Length: 113
Image (cartoon, rainbow, N blue to C red; front, side, top):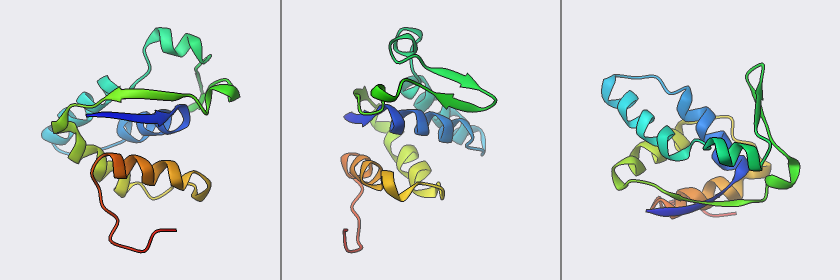
């Protein structure tokens, strides 16, 4: 399944998936997701990606960049669950998060903003 996501959303997902804890099956699913989502060394160079003291940084102009990510179908339910379970999404970035969930097949049963 191919989905589009911004640099901010992709980096956020890498950080969130990297902190998921669980049984062996959950960890295996997390490793598959990280393999697909994490930036390659070449991509990191393009956006001047850096990690310092647990924080992730990149060039501001790269935030709006859209990445096409090819997610394995078996990885989608894991990602949906991880995205829904994270409770620190900033409202200002909410549209990106909801759009990604929608692209992954999630349907919001509540009234949309």
